[in-house]
Length: 142
Image (cartoon, rainbow, N blue to C red):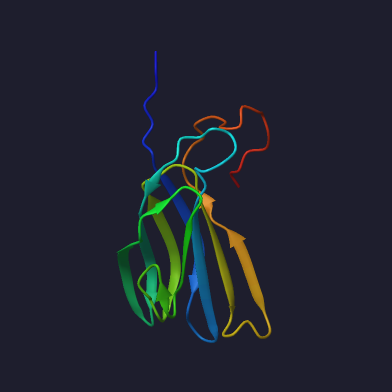
């Protein structure tokens, strides 16, 4: 008769680093504000880090600020920002956001982005819940 879905989005950043001459900047957007009539949502994310700081294996979790639809937050591993800094970390990050339609971006570069850089879109770990646009199009999964 009906389906109940949790209003959450889980994002995977499969590789982030602040080791050697590299740093990673990350951003998460709450895209529930749109021209399609989507219900505006507000929530925060728990940002989970799995990997190493130096030779020490770590599993860390830090909260983000609450953001409403149409807003985003950003931070870097080296200096923090909206999320606590994790200087020296290398591994992967899973962000558990308490709102639907979260999207993320990561940018890895040498310090100061002087010679090389690479960016990528975070993977959405959740299964599709339908189309908010009412149109059929490509799937956002990878």
